[in-house]
Amino acid sequence: MTTFIRKSLAALTVAGAASAGLLATAPTQANADTQTIAHALGNAPSCVQVWETKGNVTKTGWARNNCGHALNLKIVWANGGDGSCRRVENGGSIGHTVARWPRRFDGAGLC
Image (tube, rainbow, N blue to C red):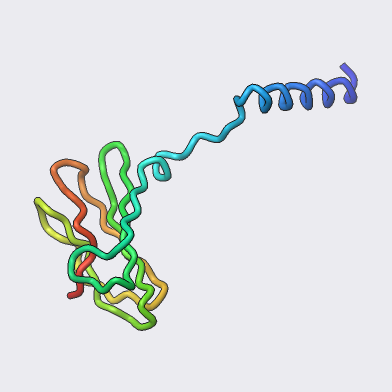
């Protein structure tokens, strides 16, 4: 096959797949199971954004400090121990990973 024909066939294949809806990108596992919580749970101030991501076996609780100054934060879990207390600068994030079951993400707390 000539280069022109190969390139033409490739373009037609991509165009056909796109029109058939076959090129829609599937979300990754992390994106598919990301849950954003609009307000801070636990005793962290409302300027702390919290969310969790879930995998097949584990889940990770996250907190981002948007308060304008450093905070000491920890990730809070029900049915087990919390994450360690860590200093988080403004704009910084922390995460803590646990087994999916029986833990429940309860947000972030000051420590």
